[in-house]
Structure formats: C-alpha cells, structure tokens
Image (tube, rainbow, N blue to C red):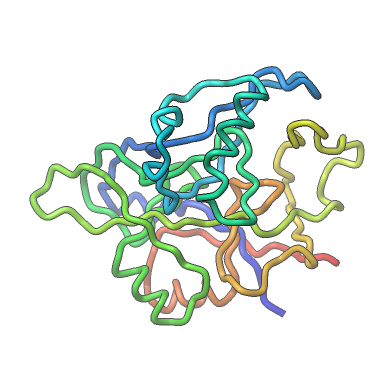
Length: 242
C-alpha cells in the first residue's frame, strides 16, 4: 500500500529564493450569502481549476468580481460553469478558474507556494516529475507579469479534491453538511487521518474533499521530488485508516 504525505510550504527552502508575487485567478464563483438552510455567508478556499477557461462562455465577466450572492444567483452561475469543469468537481462557493494573474519578480524555486494551498512549479521540475512517471500532474500556464527580460517558466498545478479525512479525526459532535449548501465547518485536526476507502489509486497528487486546502502526495511523488533534488515542499506522513 502507498504511503501518503501532507505537503506544505518548506519555508526554510523558500528563504533561499527571492521569489515575490501578488496574484489571483482570473475568474471565480461568488460566495454564498445567507444560505436559506444554515444561514451562513461563506466561500471555500482550495478549489482551483486553472485549466478551466471561462472565456468560452458569454457570461464570463460575471465571474470577475469577488462578492457573495444569494442561493438562486449562485446556483445560476454554478450551472453556467459546470459543463467546463471536471465531471466530478463539486464547485462550492469561492471556486476559482483560469490562469493565475498578477505581478511577480525574483528567482523562483522548483516549488513556490501562495500560502499552504496553492502550489506553483517550475517547468523543469514538472518535466522531471512527468519523466519519472508521476501520475495526475496537470501544469497550467500562469499570466504572471515579470520585470526581468527572461522570466522563468512558472506553472500552476491543478490539484483536484479526491480523498477524505477519516471520521475518527473529526469532532465527535460534528453536524452533518447543510442539506441546502453542503457547508460543514470544522477546524483542521491537529493529527489528521486519511480515509483509506476514499483515496484515489490513479494519481500521485490530490486534495482532500472535506478539507480542500490540504494537499496530499504519495510516496512515489515524494521519492521523485527528493531524487530530482527539487526543493520547496515539506512532507508529513499521515496515517491511513479503514
């Protein structure tokens, strides 16, 4: 059985590079305002689909402003983008689409992070991982604006939610998801456990469906990164439970 690792920004490695960027995705679903089921106004981070091009629909300008919308309007916009998204994508409030755009400068390492949930990769590192047979890597062009004459080739990995945290590491009194909007709020457990039955077997890199800011890699991914000498990721092995 594969081993699984929670992957985050290696801040020690990042300090060796001068990369600096201020960027966001071109389009996004709005947040949800005052859900009629649970009353929450919310949006979710970690659902990012940079390969999805909303310029293909006439209404793409409606996805450029960050704002909360009532349920009926959110569902209308969600329905417009669903045909362009991966078939299994849940598309909760706050889901982002299209290339990462903004300003950037400095030297980028093999992996550079925006927070702990958005991973950028240099082209040479992506090519090396793909040559090593790592599965499920989708590198998407960014629209970062560099000052230097020969900017680096930086891509964003589209990392989709595919697995779950095990029920044993969640609060025992956790309420079920809202039947109207699907929201289920809880803080990340200090000692995460992965649910074996939910984990994908066809990719070496994925997010968690019930905590989408957590990025998980297999031992195959970890070994390839370390053998390639590519820095920027810290790995924490997580237990798996049936």
